[in-house]
Length: 361
Image 1: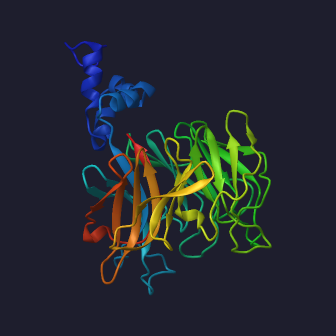
Image 2: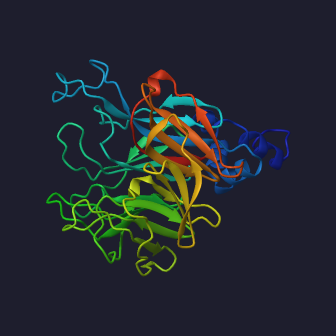
């Protein structure tokens, strides 16, 4: 059966590739051939090659809790902010809500981790927003169907404040964090999104609580963190897991500068291994070889960064505004003389960013 009657196959495929992602559920419901096309690996490749790809920044963001909307019995008299998923398109400036997963009536787990795998968003772990107990839950949102599904729970007991990242195609890697007794962890594992199962990885060389995860050059990077006895004294080292060899490389010592928060670090691009946002010197720096090199100063209206993300040659810095200025988001273009662009945040989407990831659909 032809995808579009009367059109050559390649032209029909190009027509479908031009459909905005918001219409994917409707396209998939037309017929099984269209559904198979948008779910095929070549569909995303064609969208990218023809310039139709949409960049989606998915955030876990603090939002006001309307009375009676998100209220379990434990929150009815408190009305604290809740943390909900938000989708922001930096190229169009559009902000929209994502529905929370079924059963998450009080919002997403606090300090959960996000990862992007092809056209799906994966939400891993965190703390129950009412009881503050650790949860090992996994939720997967498909942008093709606009539906959530429950994934296999993360095994191995309680774990939170772990590092997490994806290679973007199949696996979500998790490492470090701490257990219920505040013991820092060395263990690591990977979630196979396609098979809905967890695979154990070799342990890291060191315990790493509150580490940052990133993925670069075929390797899962676990940045900084601290051991049980250190309690808040962040290590300056990085460990890298080679996904092809399924083994950890030797620990890289003294990678970070003193007092660098791992939360401010992201994977690099080109010759830059890592980027970090330095609040003390108020700049963005790149790790080139073994040297941190200033790239650009922070905009004057950014008092401090709250969350840093990267897509291609752009850095997104979500921060607190200076003076009475509300939260701000700025984009640093690393290919355009390191210029900053401040983006407008609609009033209803202002709020602290807990976590985020980038999808290109």
